[in-house]
Length: 325
Image (cartoon, rainbow, N blue to C red):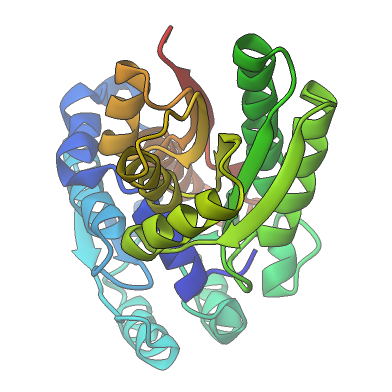
């Protein structure tokens, strides 16, 4: 899964905001600190996301400050603003200076990080990068490096299953489905699409996908969904791969004076979760970024005690959210 502008849109659509992420720090139990760290490395973690412009990533940086601070760590935040060269240069500087004790990198271009990872490995500085080992030319866990990625196959499966469940419960297993997909080139699109379609048709074999649209922005999504309703006025179910698509669909159905019995969203923004509570959204498959923040930092802190040991391959936790809880 390549982390690039495409992933930024995904993360932005799943933004949980700085306020909610700060709860991690407030609720953090300092007793869960790793069992000892290398005395030769400072308790300073460098966080370099692809940019601080997306609300989710800005919130993540603020949450990390709070959580790491509660463990006695300092945090250095870098903002390459989607520039791979700038990201590598800034990281190389701080790692070479000896000021960094660990680094968490959401890479603009994974391939560009290979020399940096070698430098960090040589200095015994643990690094966590977002993505699968294969994206960095590795076949699995590596000494001093932990990989953390979104499992889009699991996400697609959950989204398709929940859409089928809604259709079965509310429409007796039959429905005309509008599928709102991520645009071409988005991270994990192929895996998500294949899994979502298979799971939907397994859960509701009589459901029919009558149209697919690629949606990245709410306003355009609402317009496109409105046009789809003119061609298929009998659509009663929408499967959306991001928050903006799902929220745009709600707006389109409302503008057309139509009810939308089944909407399942892959996302997790506050607005979407509020929609689940109110019943306008049947279910949301939500990435749990607070939990991922904690597991990512705790893993890096533990790796300091033995930088030569193989890191882990983590996945971002996700949870199905329904009105029932």
